Image 1 (spheres, rainbow, N blue to C red):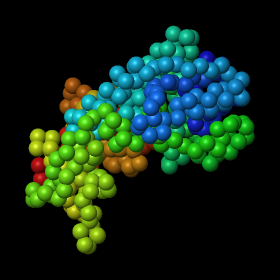
Image 2: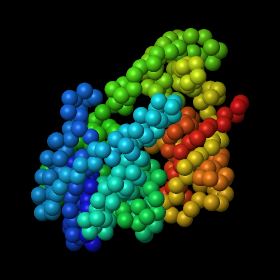
Image 3: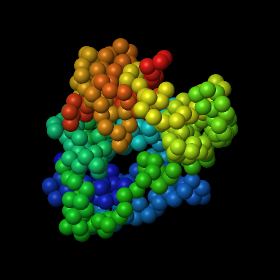
Length: 358
């Protein structure tokens, strides 16, 4: 099969390409140039280093390699979505949208025009068949959450060559292949931008809009720098010190109308922090459409366990989700990944959260 391997310069995508070459596929490597932080004003953005590393691995594997400039499309489809979401007071997920709109969207269009039959990435996920994605074997690295908004036709052409590996096994395989990225540390940051903190990125493009931090009774506890810089459930970085008994304040609400950030002492029944019901919109299925009421597991964010829930379609791409147990800090704008056991069913966006008292 003629496969285009998306290579980020990291060890995961390097091994993914190597596994495909060893399996006898006709592989070419590509680096998606989505962003250039030329003035280095938003933190370390090592795109030149990443291109060099990806190209070195491609040379070791004896495969063609090229850089594809997708900066215009990335600004329109991911950066715009990110900035508009935060400015509207919700919490978007650029990594999920990067997968759907860029890797398996714009890049796939380019790949198809150049005769490729599939795109491979270094995601920790598995393909059972042409229409089924399963969680990665390594529970600490599983990345199916970030694939939740993919469309069925995108699932069909996707390849995930490393989903059957544990991270230590992948490192060993990289050494076995003799890859130059075998010891390279994993990057942390915004999808294909680099090691950039979200707060630094937002403050570069969205002006601060200070306002009061208040508690549930309306007492002013401090001043925030802008609602877009805070997320529901946030325990640190809001500037409100813990009281004497060491229980931490946590962000429980953002009120755009009054520009207030609401905090409360966190405990097992903190008002506005816990909820069982939410409304979803923009429902996306990786396979069979989710059109019937059913029990499933819903993962409200990455690094959070999926909870048992009842999914009730409302029509027009919307649904009601009711968890069996209360969930912490369900957040409008965030992605909710939907599963049946290990199988990824699809995903949706949290539209509204319904607290017990509301």
